[in-house]
Length: 257
Picture (cartoon, rainbow, N blue to C red):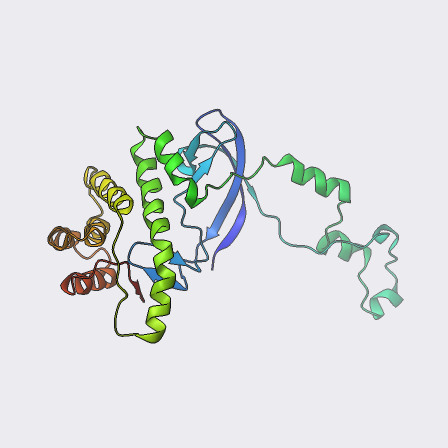
């Protein structure tokens, strides 16, 4: 399962503003739906690429930040009731199973409301997330930052496919053995092609993702060539994309692992 083990205090690279962000002890990558364009619906982990917006108006990626410290998560303890300090540790209390003074000190949160509020106020604010609808602004402001361009264009690719997903679900309920018609518009094609070029321009391109982009653009020959270069990075997804290429189908598709 996804488990938060505390808080990381980080410093934004643009203006050195400090933020807090969850420190994960474990991550669950399961989801309700997996799609060939990478979208995961109902996932227990936020796959947003670590993109955040700074208070100064700039965007940054979490891994670009300086790590200041990690504050471990304290084990959960119930709040001690008011007046716990007056608890009597006599035989009669122990007989009835009531908490003793020692029990309160060891197993309860004995801080005052003011102390708890002060501890919360001492943490910097959480890093502000960026909505999918803001990806055009991210792309414009990070024109010279290749990694941010990739993440923003990938998220915009998935975001622009979202309206089709509902039509896909409705179609599959009625005709589970067929696929609904799909045609990417010019804005979608432009974004997908630019994303594919960015991915191919790096070291060790993710050819499986490139193959999917080419397929959704409608270039099945380029998709097949990219798929051959992908190797066995994800055999299940490779199998699904191969089947869709053979069907000459360009729409994003839902599949199971």
